Image 1 (cartoon, rainbow over the protein chains, first blue to last red):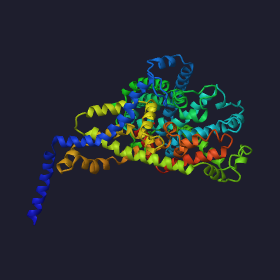
Image 2: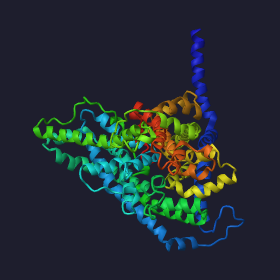
Image 3: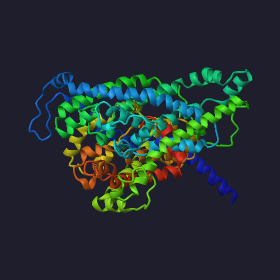
Image 4: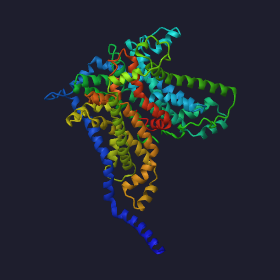
Length: 312
Length: 296
């Protein structure tokens, strides 16, 4: 009995060994291909081919139901370059992104630093600040349309209570874009805060303990430990915030439909309108290609910190 | 080099901090910090609370009782009316099918591809990895026109598949799972091979069980992402019965410009499932963002 058990054990080990040598390089290769293939096919069919298609379509006059799609070379790009509505959309998008960068990133960092003090109730605070991140853009856009209501909204009521002049928020071309940016900052801060917080948690406590032993005060510890060690995270947050703010669309669609007087037209909103309202798909693709070039430029900045360098 | 550590995201209120100072200055700093955090928490939650309270007011009382924040006679009439007048149940079902479907396919395909890219040994691996990194930088809007034409050519418009493919193709999960699997020691895989495990068996018996935390983060985050999707469903659908909830209520605005009670009731209904899930699993949500920070 004991002998046969021993034999079985050896045979099992041996067969395991055999399976490695028997399977051989080629068979193993095939199973790797089998598991990576579905995703590769999807990349190709849904992202890569359409991506190249966008360049191709942008060189044509392309109405979806037309019999033919005449080649027009760079005409769509020339038209884009001379299109004041497009330049207006670029300026609006850049302004929106700039507002997010200037307000969202520093406030998110500040909140992350406060949460990192391990105060009592930190879990509650972080939970509340993060709440808008999990709700959708449509939901927060509708809630804020109500907050911004000039007659009945909470914001004007608050301004009135402390004796400040009331604003027309989304109804005036001078304040509409800023109002959308303000809401977006509110919605997005928790997102950046959590990334900052993860960065702060990644700084080993030993660094601070050593600094305390050396007699460094709170400010010195922040200046000489936190800030330099947080630099890559900050860079990451800045670039990702820029990349995503250049895609602003849903809030504009729900809150203002690009108005009043096109003051909230953004690149993606204009893209959607030309492509899927007016069905000028060649022109819309030219807009998409320009958006890609902008985001690609920002992404090359990002490559330095993202890509292979992120440790999870 | 960025180190994103999510180990510490679970806060322990009683954890002794590294601060050993107990001066008046320290006390002042902590009080100010509390004040700022309380104010920030209020700013973040009040819009939701106010929208919810308004949705409980009868439609004809909303504008007359605007300064009375808590409704005198709370009613669910707005919820009933908005549900009767719109196919909300169908929209919710659509959203659920889409979100669950995308999460399922994302988890399966991205863990497989991530495993192959981290531990595989096959020709063309670096080409596939270049494809992943390359498609990460393509803004999804760039492919919408050709993808729209492609879906029409396949006769797929107005199907769940047409909406789902764009999100399932997202390369971020592959990238994230590859990063995660890189951290699994090779010796573990070699030992399994010695015991006769095939590539697929190593995946099901070792890699998947190890990846549970990463899977739940990726799953939760993909769910929020798809639940909030707007532009692509709006573009590819022309049958309102196929709308996901977000598109459905997003398009209500024009029609309901004066019926704020019903509109806000629909908004609360759209927000509730995610908020409820979030309150139950706050940590997983935050880790999802911290880990998948680039997807947004």
